[in-house]
Image (cartoon, rainbow, N blue to C red):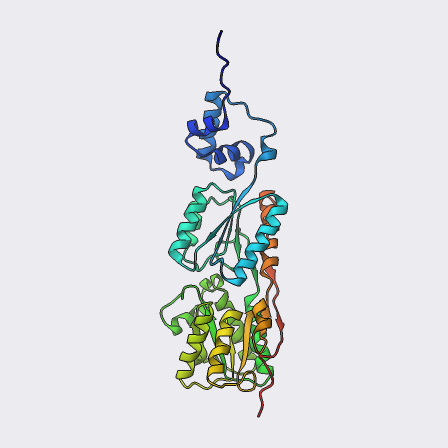
Amino acid sequence: MSKKKKSVTIQDVALEAGVSIATVSRALNNPQVVDVSSQKKVQEAVSKLHYRVKQNLRTSLVQRVALIIPSASNAFFSQMLEGVLTASYSQEYQVLVYSSHGDPVKEIACLHSAHQANVDALLFCPLTDGSAKTVTALFTPDFPLLILYRRQFLPIGVPHIYYNNVQGGYLATKLLLKQGRRNIAFFIGFWQEPAETKLEILSLLDDPRRGSYSSLDRLSGYVKALSEFGLELDPTLITTTRYDFASGYEQTKLFLSTLRDFDSVICGNDTVAAGVLQALREQNIQVPQRVSVVGYDDSTLASITRPELTSVHQDPQKLGEQAVSMLSSLFAKERVEDRVLAPFLTIRNSTAMRQG
């Protein structure tokens, strides 16, 4: 009695082609996201093994999306992650989450890991412009790719979704100016500083690289508002920070040690602003009577600090959800344009009219 011939499986095809099972599935069901070389290997293996493609295979195939963010512990990006996960669940996308932990070397490693995982699409919020060449080297021009929270990172044709940070910086500064503040310190936040000196950083305001840094766009808005009031940018009022409480606290103490007069501070986020408030409190500098403080993001923290923080409102969860919506259009081969979201001010007790 002859043995029943064993049916060929998708695992057999993947082994013969020398690719992953996921690549075989995509080559058979969504070939536009697979490079030509891999498609050819899969087709040759299918032909050689006489593999019968199941008609219902596509219905069970889940799109795998990589999301790379600067930090999962940062409140803004954790909420953006929540938005991506919520929207992806309704679309039945599988999301692989990577955090670069604010480290450009780890960011490169995340990009390579996502590429090796054979994901179907990439949602990427880069730290700086430093990884742009890696992205273009790893992913083909027609690969579904979306840049989050950066105005300009990759060439025209790659869609970006971001908040208008120029407007955010402008609104924060304009409020303080209208309240009679004239010595406005600007605490500019970076994951990695784009230059070694403060003057080199300021020179990037006229550089195309500026679009890769949300903080530089905010600084541009700051300069615009100052100009409307006949004031010029004063480098002595600019301080660089990270995005954590300790950075806001330590940089405020350092700034105070310079004895530079200031009557207000604009911060990179609400967490930094909380550190600023603590440092000012320890020096018995009253907020907002002597110094007004403006945060950024309008996070939950803004409502529980004392005094409550005036903050530039952004909705990172909304940004994450809309990013997935744009990604769905990319999967459908539809034309996707950049999407710009508008911030606004939430005014609380940390800002007030200048007295005297």
